[in-house]
Amino acid sequence: MNLTQNNKVLLIGINAKYIHSNPAVYSLKAYADKYYSVRPDGCILEIAEYTINQPSNAILADLYQKKPHVAAFSCYIWNWNMIQDLLAELPKLLPDTELWLGGPEVSFRAQNLMQEIPQLTGIMVGEGEETFLELLKYYWGHAIALQDIMMQDKDLSCIKGIVCKDGFTGERSLTDIDKLPFIYNPMLAYQKTRKENDTLVTFKNRIIYYESQRGCPFRCAYCLSSIDKKVRLRNIETVKSELQYFLDCKVPQVKFIDRTFNCNQQHALSIWSYLKENDNGVTNFHFEIAADLLTDGQLEVMHGMRPGLIQLEIGVQSTNETTLQAINRRMDIDALRNTVAAIHSFQNVHQHLDLIAGLPYENYDSFVSSFNDVYAMKPNQLQLGFLKVLKGSPMEQHADEYGIVYGSKPPYEVLYTKWLSFDDILQLKEIEEMVEIYYNSNQFTHTLPVLIQEFASPFHMYEALAEYYRANGYMLSTPSRSYRYQVLLDFACSVASDRRTLFVELLVFDLYLRENLKSRPDFSPENAIDKNAAEKKKIRHFFEHEAQAHEYLKGYDNYTSVQLLRMTHIEKFSYPVWKECLADCTDRLEAPAYILFDYKKRNALTHDAAFFEIIL
Image (cartoon, rainbow, N blue to C red; front, side, top):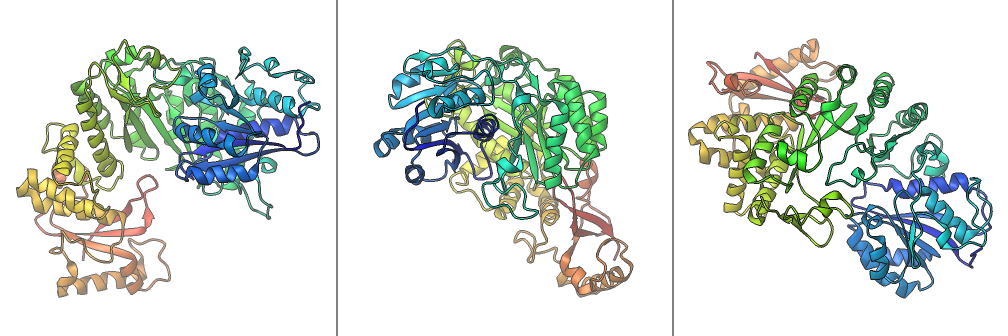
């Protein structure tokens, strides 16, 4: 045995944000707690989580105060820079602490890292649950529940799946994921004194990550999941019972970390059917899927779901067939387009579609085409990302062949390729910002479709908007959320000055859809109803009638007419800007129309207020 006076082992996760957690370290601890429950006295296994936004000195101080005998870091592209800083300083403060690494950022270059960072004791390669369990046996000794783990009087070279100073100890077979315990089991998840009806204390106000399968059948060249092509499914009855725990606890969101959730059609259908049948009206479930593989049966189940029950992340990456072939991504674009359109018609499922700039054979014009293809699919969110050449990925092996030059430090993002210059990348970065501000915010859903009609394509509108931002200094000093309406109006007027009144009304409608403003926006004082005495009187009469009859405002019982007036909003329009058909919303009305906004009733996907055309 290797018992020392201090027998504390610390699993360290450094997350990108506070709302995130590190399921890897929780899985290692849960596995150890299940199969190594009886330990020598004084042997302690703990988790310490931080974020990359904390000062590294503060993390260093906390690690020093915990004084672990073994410190094991979970390494990813988002935290590797900070971990390297900590590795340089921690041995100065805790020279007897043994330092271990694990995770995708270090698994595929472990032997090089052992030479570059001499203070390391070792690196766990690949899936870590069984490797870590044997590592605990090495440090602590004593019996373990799994029969095949016998580590008495053996050294590190006997543990498969690690790289230590003596080299690589050999591949470890893939984990049987049915042996993995549920990491959110109350006995494992609570690190505080539990109060009655208090659930998931450790993960309060954080995203819950869940794994129902490991591996991926696809071989996308930019992804590390392509290395492990064997898909292993967790027993479906086990999955259902664990999902029921989340449902019973009414957690806000559960994010599945399965790489392609619907690669096994029956597995996916069983889970979606169970969630539909047991929906608690609160919890949202997030899935990464291949939309072109969805079946009619799965779509039928989705169609009947509560709005907001599930959301889908769909990696399109490119619509250039040559590019897709080069990155080993087999996808039926027409099937994808039809499926996304079908889901969009349901109006109950949030769809997040991804593109990647910097892929082989994708130049600027080709990316414009990919962007416009995906934009036409009307996703709720369009993420314009940039290729990251991950260590160990097939893309890293072919980078020279494709002329892909990328950053030397995480996140190893593309700088330029044979087909895309650094100038192109910079321009796409600015366009990405415009898409985030104006499209992905879902704050300009009626204005943007009309404005795009002034340009050759949606991409060219965002390109021109980025140029307008740059010319006016907004790239360096981003306008506040409220002022972005004014900026978009100024931009719209710069390309279509004769349609100012229309764009003002579109923006006013979009603004009141989201919030019940106490004062009118500066760009639209002329439409104020409260300046017209006759209209004010009609509005008072409308709310007096509504307080009695509740013709429009359902669920407002026991409110006075004055309270109803304050809780809602009525706006006058000279254009039918609420119409979804572009041809219908751009012609001036013969007589003004009045729209009532109901903020108590909101769309589950967009959070827009309900609205009604009324007669005063």
